[in-house]
Amino acid sequence: MVQWVKKKAASGTSFITTEKDYAKLQQAPLRECFEELPLYVLPIRVQFLEKEADFKALVGQCLASLEK
Image (spheres, rainbow, N blue to C red):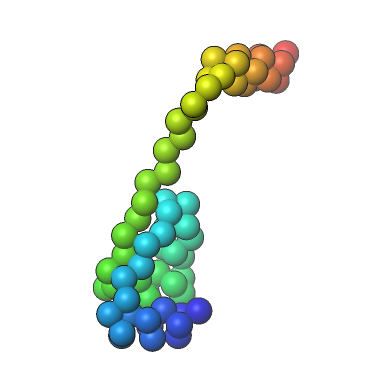
C-alpha cells in the first residue's frame, strides 16, 4: 500500500478520508506516506431524522442496567 500511495502522490493525486480512517493512517508505515501529501479529512457526524428520544431512552436503560 505504501508504494501505491507514493505512486498516486507523485501523479498529483489528493486523498480524502474519514476521521476514523485518518486515525489508522497515523500509524506506521502509512504515517510517513501521508505527512507531506494533500490529505483531506471528512468529519463524521450523526443526526437523527426521527425517533432520537426513543434511541436515547433505550441507551439510558441499557446503561442503567449495567450499573446494577
